Image (cartoon, rainbow, N blue to C red):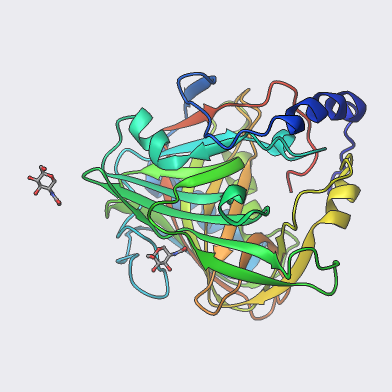
Amino acid sequence: MQSHTLLTCVFVVAVNAATLNTPSMTSVDYSKVPIKEKPLFQPPLQEIADVLSVGLTSTFETVSVSVADTPDLTQSPYNLITPGLTGNAKLVEIGGPPYLLPLVQRDKVYDLAALARHFNSDPALLAGAGAGPWPHIGVNCEGIINLSIHNGSVEQGTRIVSVEPVGAAKGTSGYLQRRLPNTETRTALLGNYLFSEGKPGKVIKVVAKKRIGPSNFITAIRETLKNHYGDDKIVGLGGLFMLRAGKVKFHVMPDFSSSALCTDADVDNWLHFFEMRAPITHVGTLVTGDHGLDLRVQHFHGFSEHGDGGHYHYDTTPDDVHYEGYFALAASIIRVDAPEETHAVGRD
Ligand SMILES: *[C@@H]1O[C@H](CO)[C@@H](O)[C@H](O)[C@H]1NC(C)=O
Ligand SMILES: *[C@@H]1O[C@H](CO)[C@@H](O)[C@H](O)[C@H]1NC(C)=O
């Protein structure tokens, strides 16, 4: 794993001090920030299934990939807010780690219902991994985003997970999962979402058991596709995967650091890590290239009915692990409010 150091740390810290003095709780106005959209390469679904069927065997002992209809994803154990993932499927990345590191920029609060309205999307599903709305609970948190809009009305199934008790030292803390009310549609700082109509339809279904390689489930999929399609044909998937058996290493962000986090090691020291157990539903996105948009190429957050939740790193039980994923093929990537000053710290 590459380790990144933030060369511009001193400079950014100086800028950030100014921002901190005037925290604004209003959400970012989408008509006033840069928004770019670039098409993604869309091979036939069956071709992707064939590529993954072969490529994933270096990471998992049992691999089965097919083009399938989604099961009704509103049912347990999937537990999504919409029955499917498809219908005008795109990916969206909002903000980025430079709004969190080296110091937080508290004014970067994003309303996802407003984003769907900005694009005139209704019905809409927004599902994926982002920072939860810190103004809602007063502290930084993980967001497992799971929001639908139908006929103008919001159904908010998003869960947030925060370190508990607030301020507990690393190693002594636990975590608390909560559901956001329909009236709270904000997120913060950074996020990677599938943006579709949430309709049933054809997706890539990936079942993988018993890990025999070093990559996590999503890295294995992303690298297999990248190796096949190369640097020019950028493919993006968004959706959900279940951890049906096994355990995973997650992090939960504690409250914002008051000292600057300048390296990946600083970030690792700051994050609180936990082992969590199946069944867990993960939502998020992956893309095989940066596309000149300063993208986070993979990002999934997980949620369980037994209270677990956070940011997925990898499974800790290779022999027992059992994954089942459903991924929609995205037609484009929408980049919202990309940081002008960027860096590569904190993207794992
Ligand atoms: C959506 O709104 C329209 C007009 O207000 C109404 O006719 C329709 O029945 C609504 N559909 C649903 C699914 O609520
Ligand atoms: C999504 O929201 C629905 C409705 O609240 C809930 O049943 C489900 O558990 C949520 N799923 C996730 C992954 O947050």
